[in-house]
Length: 123
Image (cartoon, rainbow, N blue to C red; front, side, top):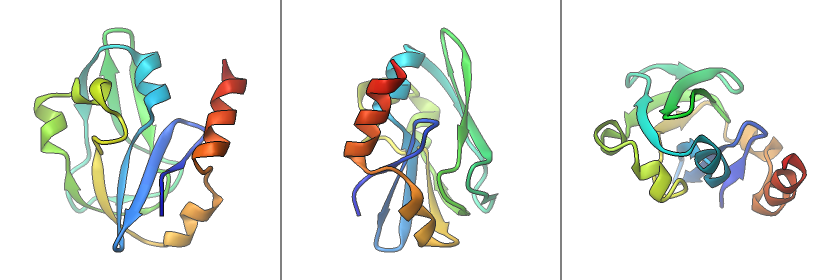
């Protein structure tokens, strides 16, 4: 499965039963210089549509919403040490890995083409 996106500018990518969650390139561009990420602890259960993390930039603090539900199995230590990596490549730098509760939740999200159109209309 490729990337799937939310209207809140998060993405999820599922590989071999593990879901990777991050923020979109559109989100990082609008945040500008990211200086801090606040991530959940391993073992926390995420609920689709609910806040699970925050990203702080020189402009503002933005909540990050779970695109799908599941249990956090790993957080990105790289981002805790170097949050600016999100500005360099938001789609390569995931925030958390989760064990999805229901992979089918991702079916309701936008694919890359639909998300691109959504962002164009958001401008």
